[in-house]
Image (cartoon, rainbow, N blue to C red):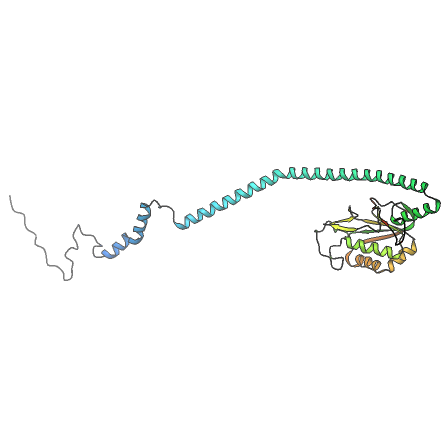
Amino acid sequence: MPAMPSQEPGPRRPGASPGRGRPGARPDASMSLLTAAMDHSLDEGYAQAAARRRAAGRAGLPAGSRARLWLAAGLALAALVVTLGAAHARDAAPTVAREREELLERVEAGTDDLDRLQDDVDALRADVAARQRAALPDDHAARADLVALLAGATAVTGPGLELTVDDAEGTGQGAPGTPRDGGFGESGRVRDRDLQRIVNGLWQAGAEAISVNDQRLTALSAIRAAGDAVLVDNRPLVPPYTLRVVGGGEELAAAFAATPEGRYLQLLADDHGIDFTTEVGDELRLPAAPSLTIRSASPVGAAEPTTE
């Protein structure tokens, strides 16, 4: 077999790499540092920490993703609570309305029963007064009638005036406990202290008998407030407040307007919109006061007590 001709390597260029041009050599063989940085971009410390987490069973989402998931879960839970609360309120609304109606019915029924009982008391009181007058001598009977009239124990009829006081227009139901400055304020509502001043002014002007919304006033009457309600002898009243006064007509109206309380009422109307009207009448009838308390007193040196 003939021998193959040998191929001698030619002369190398100065500076040429011995391995360049070989079929098995990588082109980036001389850039091993850059190649390692690109192939292994994650620091070994991070890789080791990830390996430890996987070994401990804590491998999962990154911390930012877990926080977003917890936030979403919290929002979903809050939405669920609000939805359940709204559904419960919607279901309970008919029950609350029904209980309120039942309570109003009970209040109205109790008020009707109280009115009927008061009518019975008035009839019995009138019968007792008639029997007392029949049993007393004429002079004592006349004195007893005068005492009963002054005490408010009997109805009275005579000339006088009718004073109606109402809240300012559009006031509605104000918030309970609204502060008042000097007895009145910006609420435009008639308060218990306003009625007190007006009634005291009418007594000062010469009134002989006064009633507020058909509640006869006596020396023991009280005008108070319970929340936003005005009470006269513990009976709740609602505006407008009608004061019927026996004791004169035009003269009584003029005398009341000249009192400080009359000017106070005018100030309420001018500055706060409270409405009031005054009408003079010749035949005003005031009912007897309910639930009178009988008290007796004995003058010093008297043998028998006198009843007031």
